[in-house]
Length: 441
Image (cartoon, rainbow, N blue to C red):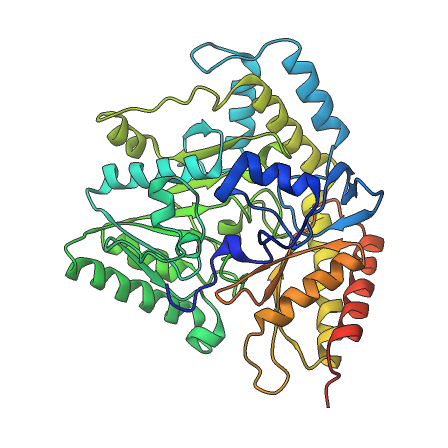
């Protein structure tokens, strides 16, 4: 994976950077698998809406976490979880009304052909199951993903997550293609991306693998956020289906109204995926995820092995998920993502016109990618990106990085973000650049 910056290395703590007792305790407990943000990690004690509160009392605008999608500690979600866990929590071998009420509500947001929903605990499990279903339904084994994709941390999903691999190459049944954008494919992004998928399928066949699936996060978040053009993924989907494979829409990041114009990222592209996976924002912090599939595809898989998940679909998760759906609709959060996201993008582009180290600004709704570049060469500048992230922390804003080189700011605040909070973010970003960056000539 030469040239690829692993996703867990982006702005990560390095042992020796801090001498705090809390950090030492974490390292003793977790060891080499410990993942902490910032070189001087923050101890958090509370959160509400789009704000997180540190042990020292510092209040941070949270532009990093897309898990509490309707806002940290949203009272409706909190109340639903408290009520249900005080009543009943068990597995899906029993009939529990709230579980099927949630499944019916979730299915009402999905294409009608996706008639079966399997609940899991994490997006990793959902994507793992989706790949297994695709293989059972098609008889193929090969998978096409994007160059810096991240789809999970099981053995199977790690193999299809180039950004998770530090040293080992992709297995021969996985081929990665560049994400859809004009820098990669010129003016006809849709046709270029489709041709790349076709080339990947040919490579898989040369290696002895019939294609099973095209697995896409429809906003290509780990690749650096590539949202446009709307509809630009349909041709690639057609190419995969013509070769006998399925299309899996990984909605763990772009789903549940985040892109502003549509409830799902795939819908923004006019796609009718064969399988949809979802996770992070479903429970606003409660661990839950799901895979939605066509009944015949799921039946093909279950005829061989079947599937059961002890905690997936438990009543407390269903209560959290139902509350999240209700909040999104009752509070108009998808519309808010559209309006506030458009203002953020416009503000960031205005700032970019004055800065030599701000490159492209891309995105949809409240999922935005901003490239940081070297002033003279215009190439990606991951070192400067880390400095900006640290400067934003000093300004009371948490933000992360993405992209192949780790030089794209990944902007994904809770969907409840207000215009005032967006303006505060823009002002903080401007101040950070004023301290660090040179003006444009």
